[in-house]
Image 1 (cartoon, rainbow, N blue to C red):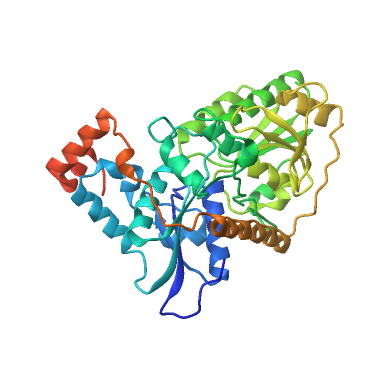
Image 2: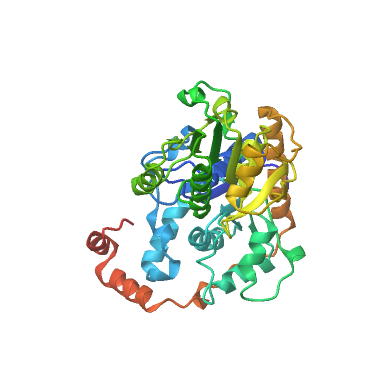
Length: 418
């Protein structure tokens, strides 16, 4: 794809529509990297935020703090024509008048619907890089939209397996036909001073990286507790590098560890960047996807967890290809802890020592493939017909009330903002 022109009268524009919320997570970090990549290559980069973010942890995204359009969480068909046009005009106000080519990227289903509608209004290219790994929004009513974007080669997932799982319930699809794009988000570490660098050294130091509300986190906790029970005379430090949007989630974790005197639990909360010295104090990590890449890039023994089954996928034995190897005695969390910490038989791992410059080069190479994906997509102008979507009875009632009462009064009654 050609880089944007330097002519200020007609600069190509890349629009990112996403919700970075008040968390540190793979999605916001991916988008942060994408913004930097695009700006380095001369694109006018526009961010339209879903929802209102009041406490942004990633400093580079703070310029969008407090902004947000909450109608993104609703289907365009849930508004009457006048209200729909009002929302589209609001979206158009983000786009510079003297723009050249426009590319719109979305990452969730609700954002994708509005991204498609905006693209049609602007005659722009809309790509949908689905960053979710669970597909609750995909059903018999919505599947036609995903098929439409797939057939135009404008839909990609974070890997081929994810796209296969998305479409498999609805029609026969071959894995080779699926499109996966790396949404790079593993450059989250730095050699900085931090209180976590003074983590206590116990007999065994176990770590996990990532958001604490993910499904496999409880599986990890269960395994650590089982390991602690079987080794009552050993001291264990369990460090959770991550936070949760709900204090109740953290309270529940702390409650589970309350009766274990041989475990020292540390929950860092949202943290960016993560101090390298603290990570290296752990003997083993159990984390999902990109988070597993973080610790393995430092050469620390790492077990990758599956986001779908919530079970271990295996030791990471190649930090570049993400190849994994099962534990020798079973596939429960305790099997990996026993093999690594008791038997001292962790498999060898191939990795390249972490280097900030090299990591950024790798990220840029991945994003170059994103741009090639856009180049290879259908160049015929066409957009999805949203009249094909059938609203549920509940959605139809809400649409009627919005039309009768108006957005302001309806929003006040429902405590919603538009």
